[in-house]
Length: 289
Image (cartoon, rainbow, N blue to C red; front, side):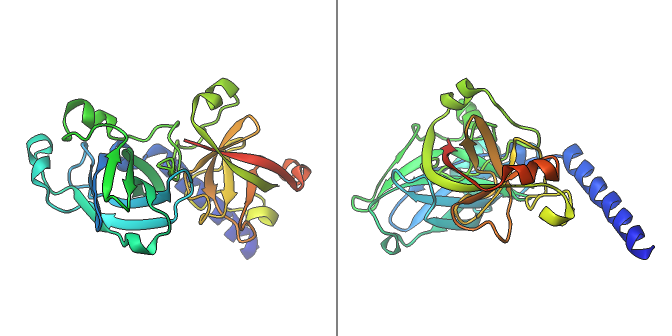
């Protein structure tokens, strides 16, 4: 009896948590910002929530070798540094960030850099990617560098379902969460996005049952899993929020599993029978950028 009561209580609590998360989306969804400068020692930029200027952004910078969508280096900083150039437009200069980087420790000479604001395990892109050449010390922005004004503010990065996760910027594509329920079987939509093949992965299926995932009903990222949307992956290869296409369906990495390591993906199904029926297959996986 005690065990049954505990299970019932746990189910109720998890349901309330899930409902609250869907009802109150993270403020970071409105974050704006971008990488503005890259040199031989630092990567600098800014991140700002126009709806709450006291909401200090935690930033994750992804560094990828040019042409490779998977990051080789992650940098974590807080956007709380003062920048004079932000004052005129944001009325508050304390939204800059600067991450130190030792380029000599990274193999290769050409890199792609992308920054993300991270809130409650979800990723929100900060502007476009920036290319950097270690040999020349030169950096090039995907779009002309501008002060954070007018159109630059709006273009600087609210999360959208088409942005992905784990950049190449997207060259390191990066993690961006489209939120529960996002899915598409529209191959025209999938083909409209830039895709990069990640090679062949081993695929399996799982569900919310006690056997598959402990029966908690919440993913590692804190979302409610959705069929034809949620997948579990090795987060060192595909970070949370990464979007991939498998067949004609675009999935989002929202979960992880102790047995999901390396080039493996666990696809979420609504029931155990469907998950078990998937078995163990192989398929080419495309990173959506």
